[in-house]
Amino acid sequence: MKLNQPVPELPVADVEKAQRYYCDVLGCKIEWIYPGKEIGAVSNDETAIFLRKRTDSFELAVHWIYADDVDAIYKELVEAGANIVDDIENKPWGLRQFTIKDLDSNVFYIHHDLPEYQPGQKAPSHVAQMK
Image 1 (cartoon, one colour):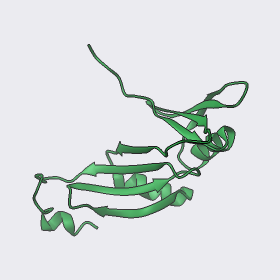
Image 2 (cartoon, rainbow, N blue to C red):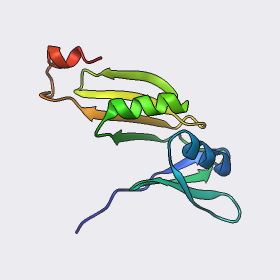
Image 3 (cartoon, one colour):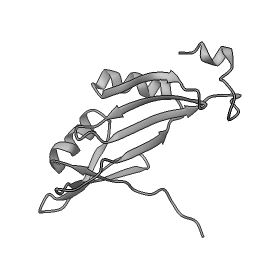
Image 4 (cartoon, rainbow, N blue to C red):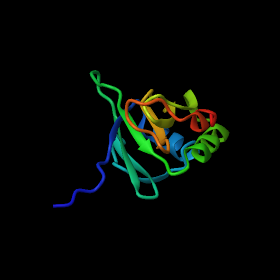
């Protein structure tokens, strides 16, 4: 049995506004929106995200997104005006990572594995200098 990537469903205050944000800032395209505008979708290449109008009780979503070139993605998102809440840096857990939040405070950790990193060890000095 083969499973494909899961599609996250994010709670948002306004589906249309969220779709515009994801297009303008994160480079997505609008796929669809239901007539009642309570749920819609955006995509970027092979990644889809559902956006659902939130109800009174909800929890924010957290997503980890692997990027082949995390530095290039960081630069693009900074230039697009994304809400960067943690700048790009090498983390002690072996990732080069930064964090963004969308309009509704859903969290996205964008990362790439550091080369030559083994769990429980500090990042090599030449990698730590990349920051």
